[in-house]
Image (tube, rainbow, N blue to C red):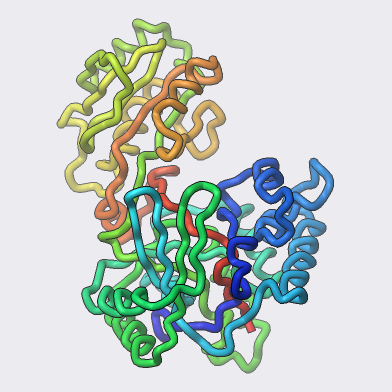
Length: 413
């Protein structure tokens, strides 16, 4: 099986992309989605967050929600808002956010290569979130949320992509968050063959975002394979929807932390305990760390710059030397008592896109007591962890800009 292959995409009809395109299902809560979809009957949020069309308080995992998503999906098909391409293509997808631009390839990626770790993971998944995506895929018989993949950049892939984007795009829309989404179809068979061959030469791909979507795709494949006595491996269910960007264009932002209390410590005792692992300096303005091993701390209406002492940095462990691990292992767990950041309700996580003012707001409001700003995890570190077969701590990476849902979907038959 090829690592990736072209597919006949299900896409908005000409002129309808702006009506359909929506933020990813997992970056909005139900009420935010309800507001964003108001007055937009064709928004893909009616498919990815269908509880917005049911009474307030509806359990988003109830059978009625998945049925409503299917009803809304079928309505877009019946009304011709979504149409399927007549033959398999790759698609070139560009995201522009401010001065940042990244251009990747929309394809379907091999589930067996995911299962064998040629498509590499770096996060644990939660069974309830996997179950949700499995149900959504099965009910729609389609994958509508792409997995965000990356690869070590290739000059040959770059050349093909550069050629495709000289043509007229199929889609060019500005989302309401200011991100521009542009899509081209790659229809030239020689270009398609070149892309397939170049990716087949690659040793691996890496999941940047979408671990639950890829894990769900794997479960759907296993279920459908076992139920199909004529299984060949070529069926559409053997692949999952992906957008694949080169590593040298990816943008990772900081993923910051806020904590509710000091674990019973007073102000002076808390600051004193930090001295064992960190050099600490009081600053007159918000601290955006300038390098790995440096952190900002907002506490008691003051900003501090923290630098981890070198003797506390493991040199050979790709996970424990990450900044998110250094902060967890030297401060958040031993001093603040948050041993399990996945489950402990005393800690919360704030994506860097929200800025340092959001950290100040959360603390000044009294909701939280202390906030920590981070230097972004590097893509090199992400790849090193994945290559070692390890997983990163929760909330280690925040990728921007985000992919849109609804621009291309993958039908499983």
